[in-house]
Length: 615
Image (spheres, rainbow, N blue to C red):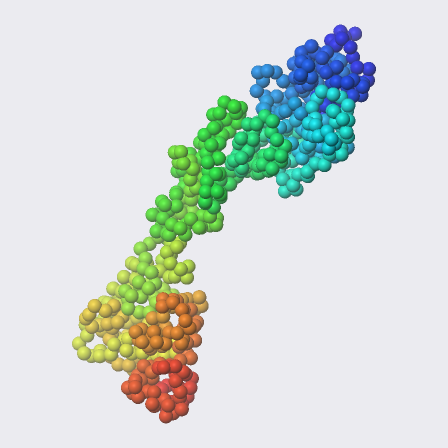
């Protein structure tokens, strides 16, 4: 027969419920034996003080005496006890060690619905930072629901676990606030890390990366609390308050902790991506506090209040952020390397078009762009000429440069982000200069046998875009004889040909090989297509295009439509062999009325004016 450790034993042995707190079990046994206070049982250990009657404060010897008094095995009391000691930094929670400050024993928190389901106190309700019940998904209460009482529940009297310690009001009548549904999944995983059920702990760990899955559940919860200020900086001061207000926990702490579960599940990339996205958003309110909070987490990695395990995890995160500096470039560096527009690169990074990550550069947190994403932009970076500059250099309309690129006579260069419109074309300067040189070598000096300027001959073409590209190609390949005159004008403006009869050649005929959809042209290009000199085009601009800014681009489809619809007096003058002033009288005598000053309907004019269709 075993030796009795306790001076007396309870007459009715009650089985302990899985997940029940030791204080709740002792109080339930005391209530079943009609004892006025739970201290009637705990005082058998000899270590319990009158102001701290909790069974949670029993040492190992006291737990054996208590087990003998209650008629249960010492292993049961040790499993359900926090194994508290004055110098202990970690306490026990059903076999999981948690930081000492994570558990509170002074007040009795409860879930009204859970008590109505089973009148016992759950050990998880003692977790200070998570005042929730995952059985009923409601926030815990700690005050009597009786309006005349409203006392905070403690562990002194033993009216019953489901009754108020002072007025015996059923605690099941309290109205608890439900936990928002969007927080429940993440909170369930966090609670699962320290749950008394091994299956719940196993399920929660299945969602963690290997580096964290090996850690103790209490250390993981400690890591989550350490990262919570990154989500909401207000929880920093709340975690330091040992009497954490339930309202503050409900409004700030619980949502912040729920947001840390994705950090743990995607460790360490998830929290880095979260901070990077906040910094991408910019603004003092959005990104500034996140940067400071995360930097504070990294700086406090050696805080003696943290357990060595969490310190090691954070130190590895710091080293990872430091090492990331060599794997990326800043936006300023990327601007220099690629020639792109800096604000545009910022917007691309914010929109996720540039893969970015977080890096620690000295004492500064930065969002860097992956070098691998920058490399393709570097290979495409070539000395380029924008469309308008290439047209000015060659002396042609901008649409002629597009067609030259389409024919493969000049190479297209990519335009760095932000350096021009997305539809804007650029050509490689080397290829443009090579074509310019090839064209120049084919042009013999003018000696009078080529009296007609190519630009003048082109004015005999109307109703569609001029075939500049195919004509220049024919000259460069030696299929069309031409010469050039001296002067400061661009090369195409100085080319001369033998006669206007060359307009009958195949290279001057309209083709359908070029797809102009989506292409933009300038007002000067439209004026050239309609055979109107740019200085005189301003008087027609509002009639043709409507009111608008002086500098604007027009779609090629619109330009073709206007060129087919209207014919100018300068084109009619050249085709009819009349002075420009005589064209109006000639048209009126044949019944052709002007649509606007200097503009006639092309269809009507070609039908009624003899000789207009003959170049």
